[in-house]
Amino acid sequence: MADNMKGLKRSIYCGEVIEEGKEVTVAGFVQKMRNLGTLIFIDLRDKTGIVQLAFNDNTDRELFEKAAGCRSEFVLMAHGMTAVRSSINHEIPTGRIEIIVDDLRILAKAQTPPFEVTSETNVNEELRLKYRYLDLRRQPLQHNLIMRHKIAKAARDYFYANDFIEIETPMMMKSTPEGARDYLIPSRVHNGKFYALPQSPQIYKQLLMVAGMDRYIQLARCFRDEDLRADRQPEFTQIDLEMSFVDVEDILSMAEGFISYLFKNVLDIEIPVPLKRMSYTEAMEKYGSDKPDTRFDMEIKDISDLVKDCGFGVFANAVKDGGSVRAITAKNSSSVLTRKEIDKLTEMARGIGAKGLAYVRWVDEKPSCSFAKFMSEEELSAILERIGCEKGDTALIIADKNKVTLPVLGALRLAVAKKLDIIPEDKFNFLWITDFPFFEYDEDTDSYVAMHHPFTMPNDECIQYLDSAPEKVFAKAYDLVLNGTELSSGSIRITDYELQQKMFEALGLSDEEIEAKFGFLVEAYKYGAPPHGGLGIGLDRLTMVMLGAESLRDVTAFPKVQNASELMSECPSPVDDESLEVLGIKIVDKDNKE
Image 1 (cartoon, rainbow, N blue to C red):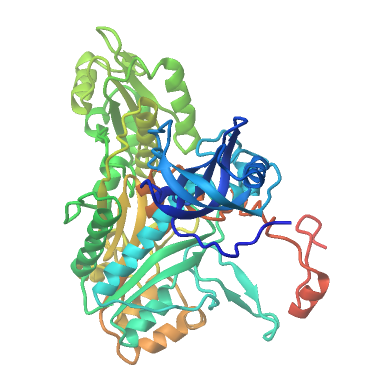
Image 2 (cartoon, helix red, strand yellow):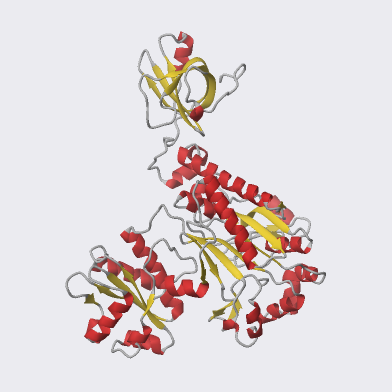
């Protein structure tokens, strides 16, 4: 039977025991036990660190035997006096001190865990996720969750100080189109009808502005049924805010103030503001991405004008067909980017849409060029000069439509930088991406579709082109990017009822569709809406980048894996037929359709 705690109360955390001659009571898990015959040492661990418990010749025999019976992960409470250790451990803050124990309680015994609970581990992630409650005992993950807590606290502190009001919005709402599939909840009362879990609180926070709340903040839980990756989970948290009587500058300034406050208070790092800005068009032209990592160079260079009349048909035809020919140059890379490595990059480029990959690899006095036989020396020299390719460098070239050329080179740029290990890990490069296109062309439907939600305000000077030239319409929308990760999206919202109707028409929505999907918001606008806008900052992604973590799973207590299942609780799971019957639901085999 386990001991009880009667008469003992924790007085200090393990990682805080740094003074000698103090009477203390600590509690935690056994990290390690060393029995030297006449001496026993137990490393006791809690969320703050480790402290050594000591038992010696002067220890009561019954207490000594109890200590000898302790094993890894036993839950203990211990009382005693602190003293200087005979053998100091300089690796931990408490390494100078030990506790000479005079009272020990075994509060819970533990079976041998399926893996050792240590900071460094080679155990496969699947096993660790199955026993996540043990994995979370490890110091790195505890540190990550504490960091996430500090970021959330800093957000509340900052926005509270700036007169924001925290308001909860519904977790069960009307299904509205927001770019991904909704998670649906069947209604027992309203048979055949469904609630949706919110992809974001977008419509509700706009209605709060209509309601006159002026400044809203929420650490909002959001849900999206989409394919997962390292920086995506089906459920996530965003620092969600909305402001009335503001323009783009006000919102960006408020967000920058938060970033500056956060990094100073949590990491003690000064982030200079205002943050750098770049238009969407410039970002795509330079980096092939609307979330570029600017910690390293390797910008994309356009050589279309140099090759439009050359003898290499791949280049000339790409320009003739309205596309472009562009290149990136990796400095001092030719020894690393061998022919074999370039072949791998070629396969990568083809896998993401390119027809092929041309290259220049300059190892010896003369560059090796995959298209040299189609070029004169003067033409090749002009290309090398334009793209800044010199001896020791490698250049990669793509020729195609811009929608292929730019993103493929953007992906190659990142892959090459990682291969060359030239991305500095100790830098935080923030960047606002502004002036997004309002529409994007969908070749499948031969029509323009909204690049954002339909309440995004177009730039004033672009409104005249809504009907005649959709490609000329840009939005009052902005993204915040950190080290190549998109942290935030936001915009100024449309509040004019007539303009909103015009936007719906431009998107091809019928009156019936407008009423079914957004009727309650459109109705609200008829009663007067202040100009407003906002954004949502991904708390999970922000934590991940600040910590330099590999995946959102490292900063989420109980994450899902790639197929959106949670290994520990084995969800999603079947439910009984009676529960389904109450909801009017019948499971159909997707393969047999029966």
